[in-house]
Image: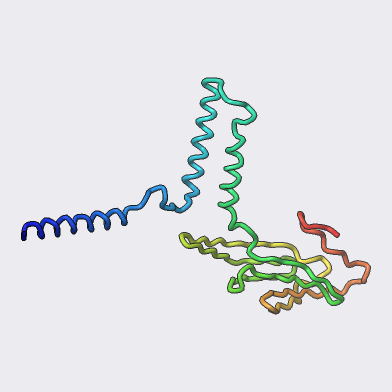
Length: 191
């Protein structure tokens, strides 16, 4: 009788251990792997080379559709890769009777932006940092553009209001008909 209890206990322990081991096992396809852009690019490149070799060596394959789906996948991959390249700040010019004001709105309120204005050039420098669960990306930027011709770059006033940086440039003492409007930035909508 004692042997029977020991045997049943061993069998019971083995069954409990087996269920525990099975519950810890997971389906490899069910596990979600993080998206690896470099791996995906290499797969696209290999597929493109395979299609080219097949077309050149055997003559099989449609000329027009040789890269059709690859182009779309490449665009999708590249748009994901360069999503961090959107501007780090927005800027706009406001004009009043005293002068022009460059309004700079940072993408992130904690972002540090350095603005340097001399008599003829405005320089905006800074860093933008983007963090995800697995990566951290830091990008530095620097933009330089001329002070408007009708403004005096030596009498600049800088202020901050509602999270926006204001660069105020007074007009030069010119005759009123010598002022010229600011030329549009390429790509902006003109009204």
